[in-house]
Every structure is written in C-alpha cells, then in structure tokens.
Image (cartoon, rainbow, N blue to C red; front, side):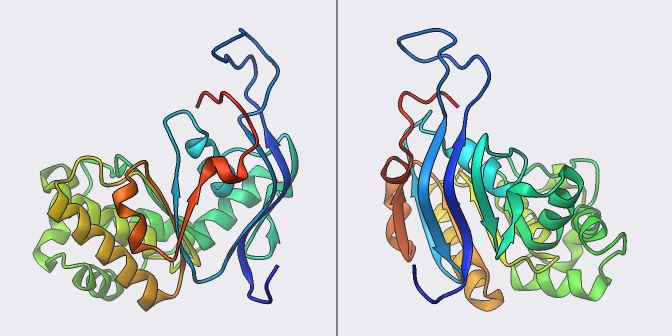
Length: 238
C-alpha cells in the first residue's frame, strides 16, 4: 500500500449470483467475484481487460454500488461504500462517480442540454447546472453550442459519446468508470475518443477506470490490469 490516497479499495470481497450456472454444473454455489486485496490510487488511469464472462460487468456494478458484495468491504474515495444504504449509495454515486455506459444510455427524446441537466439535477441536490457550465464543458469536448437543443437521437455516434462524457463529468466526479464504449467505432474514432478521455482526466484530475476486451487500447493507460490477476473466481458467467 502506498501513501497515495486510494480511489478504489477491495478487501476480501466476494459476490455470487443466486442459482448461477457454470459450464460443469447447474445451480452451483459459487462466486462471480472473489478478490482478496486490490486498490487503485487516486489520479491513475487503469485499463481492465478480461474475456467475456470473466466478471467485468459484475466488478463495475460493485464499484458503482448497483450491486453490493456478498462479503467483504469496498471503499470508494475513502468511504466504506459497500456498507451504505441503497439511498446513500445512490447519492454518493451521483456526487462522486461518473459512468460512461457501453450504449451511452442517453434519453433519446431529450435534447443534449436536457440529458446533461438531468445528471446535474440529481447530483447537485436537485439543482440544475448553469447553462454556462454546460456550454463550457461541451466546448471542451468539441460539441458545438448549436447541438445543445438537438435531441440525442439525432446525433452521430461520436457526438453521442461526447454527450455521454459531458453528462458523466458535469458533477465533477473524482472517479470516472467507462464500460466498453468503443465497440461501435472505427480505429480513428476509437483512438480519438481515448485521447479525449485521457485529456479530460488530466484536466479534471479524476481517476479513470476503463474496461474493455480490446487489448490494443491498453498502452494508452497508466496501468493494464487483467481481471483474472485479481479475481480468484472460476468459470464465471456474467
């Protein structure tokens, strides 16, 4: 353990799905996640890889608090996150954790501005972010101001990505979790997206956790972690 503050810390964490199926036995009582000790220092950019079914989605859901461990403790930014009530986890996530989903999860009929405002509303105690803050953030993400009033379903994939990042960053989170966001992009757009994320991480000084099966992206990050190196569970099915 270093003296650097930790963004994520797992201690003896297990998680198992009820009636989980393995390749050898049906309804076998087993864990999808079994991590004895793992931490990520604040300010790092970490690339996590793993095969399909290796537990990547489960790990992210545990970090974001949408799942709670069967046993053990998860701390996020020094807070014993896994022991909080569901309501307090939701509030903590809204304030401190940004998430960019694989499918972006924008509300298609809302405008760009409204999609970002929704995240700000729930993260800032039911207060809307100033329009100037949204415009400035979108400008930094190469989103033209005229797009703010455009419905999300009329944007290109690349524009939707940038809106998803803006929505995740509007509350200035200390931790950004990004889940397989480049699968629909060509090589040039994919590389541009990664560089944009890393530039944002440097500017806003957040910890970046990027999950993907695309190993060609690993060299962009401070650290490459194979999930199998920390997860002792076997034959996982996500």
